[in-house]
Length: 273
Image 1 (spheres, rainbow, N blue to C red):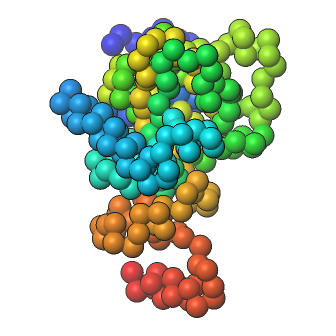
Image 2 (image 1 turned 120 degrees about the horizontal axis):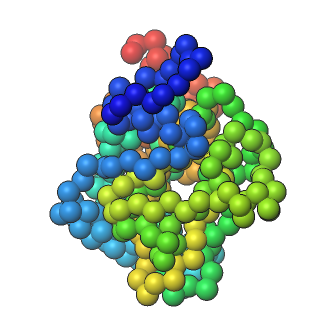
């Protein structure tokens, strides 16, 4: 790449690789599209795992009709609890390295949700602008959390690809309606991509105007001070994994002790490590 012409510049960001480039894009505009590195056969297996996880969820919690009554029929909470392949997805090396560069060495998986944007829909329950740390109207000089939305299908303008308001992660208040109408941008991305956002970026799903549902798996990685959406250690169980690094990412080491004895036990464990 030829050097961009400039003058009066004494400092410049150095992007060593594709992850640095993505980090820079997220810092500047709030989002980037990152290749997962998965092959087509791996994507096909994940699609089958998504269908299996959805069946298991519906069987466990009373069926699709019961879930639709609480508006949960288009979401699979913690899909890794049903299919271990979603644990591997959450541990994608490129995304973990990106989180490390943006959040520091210690971060946790705050949430993982399988998402279906149904076809021929008049309304979509995620079709409203929000932050993935909702109800918060402040910004910080460093990211608190990163959203990594994995595209199981192509994200297109026709099937409800994610809308964002670029730069809104830098302003506490929600922009004016006129600014949203003028600045909103739809992120199209091929299947196998991660759409990565600063979690303070206002974004929204869009209505799927095709006949086929659009599938994705959303991940939020956060600093360990933030409470997980669902207590993953409790949801997954103590025997889910004994790998110390994976346990750290899943929040096993940052669960709030239930009593004083539990706090002392956690202190003893830290001193022994």
